[in-house]
Length: 252
Image (cartoon, rainbow, N blue to C red):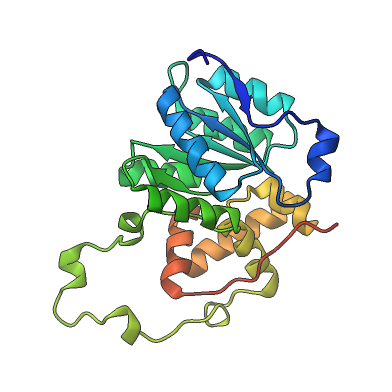
C-alpha cells in the first residue's frame, strides 16, 4: 500500500450487502498521514468490530472525497496534524456538512485547549495517541456505545491546589444537584442529551423536530443553568454532577 493511497481494508462490499450485515456492521474512516499509525488503528478497530470495513485517508483531500463517496460511514477517526490542511478546519467542515457523522479526534496534540476546541467543534471524543492500547480500546468502546470520550486529565479540571485548599469539600460530600434543581425542562434535557452525543444544533433540530432558533434558545438556557460558557464545559459539568441522561435516538 502506498502512503498516499485511500483504501478500504477488509471484505469487498456494496451498499446493499452492508445493510444486510445488520446493525453491528460498521464502516469507519481512519485519517492519518502515517501508514503505521493507520495499520495500528486498523488492528484496534478489528479487535472491537471484527466485521467492520475500515477505510484509510492520509490527508484532508482524500478524507472529504471518501466521506462524499461513502454516505453510509459510521465513524471518522481524525488526526489533527495533516499535511494539506489544519485538522480543526477539517473537523469543522465535516460537522457542518455531515452533522449526523460521528467524528473522533485521535492526535498526539492533546493539550487542554486543543481538546476543548475539538469538542466544541463537535468531536465525539479526543483520544491521545500517547495513550496505551487499553485506553484506546475503552475510549472507542465508549464512543460506539454513544458516549463522548474525554481524557481523564481534562476532566480533572480543578487545579490540585484548589482541590486541596482548606475548607474544600470532596465531591462525594457535596449536595447532589438534579436537573430540576437548576430549572431545566424535559425538552432542555433532551437537547442536553444530544449535546452530550456531540450533535450539532442542526442535527438536534432534525432529531427533535424543532426550529433552529428554539434549539439555540435551549442551548443558551442549558449553558446558563450549568454556569458554563461552551459545550465542552457543559460535558464536564454534567460528568461532575453524575447525571444519567436518557439516550435520544432518531425517530424511525
